[in-house]
Length: 69
Image 1 (cartoon, rainbow, N blue to C red):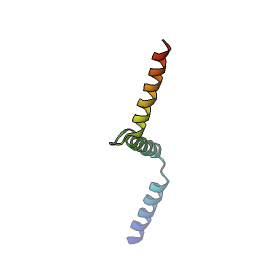
Image 2 (image 1 turned 120 degrees about the vertical axis):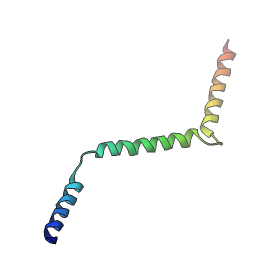
Image 3 (image 1 turned 60 degrees about the vertical axis):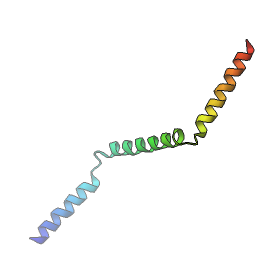
């Protein structure tokens, strides 16, 4: 009796570990979470260096264009 349960559990475990269905969706979910964390780290927070740099660059471009007229 215990042998048959053991064999069934071994087969179920082997089938589970070899099953590749759903792996792609899990990989996409992990990539999505990583991208969301990266975006939050870049654009979030009090000391937003990227936002400050972009604002300075846009202001400099705008000033240069205004000076050409």
